[in-house]
Length: 251
Image 1 (tube, rainbow, N blue to C red):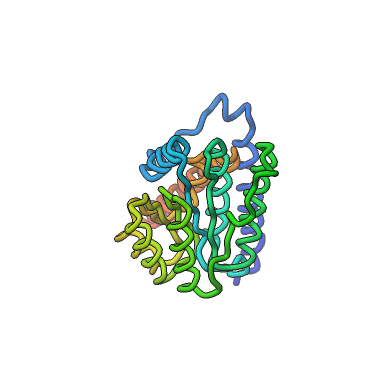
Image 2: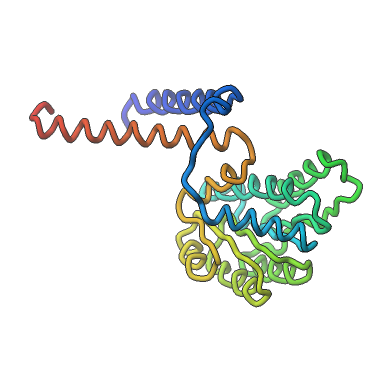
């Protein structure tokens, strides 16, 4: 590792953080509103949330069987952000959203998200702690428990975002037998291939982490997407500059 790499990393981090704060300000968002490409999965999810509120049915958010201690499980954080926003959007429903997971830390965090939304909506006394469940301690026991939970709770839509493996097929099959909508995404290659084949809509690549921004969780989520686009353009320009300098014999 070069001695300059930590310095470069710190500069990139500070620049990214500063730009996110800048684009998160209300003045900038009002004067220069963000414009993103259309994400069909987000449109369908909004429609599913609206139907759940009208029909008095439930949404099920599954965060996978991974642990927050696993560095390869950042998708669960995106799932928690999505749970937060879905819970807000479905706050007027007779059946609030339910969340299943396969680890104790994700269960505690999902309970905290649901409790926070209930406090904001002044419905804390009606909150059911059982809406955030750890359905199993192993991947396949978790999947079986998640399927049983969605079948027993009047679920009409499922959002799967987190660390999944081959057990993702069981959850998708259970949702298919129930005839409910399935939107899914994971950082796992195995789960991505299963979701692409079995889910109604699959989140591929960065779409998984962009979904909270499309749902309008916080201004920082949308600002982060704008900053990512800026950094992409900078990288593209640098690469083009290096190529042109090579062709010109300057480097």
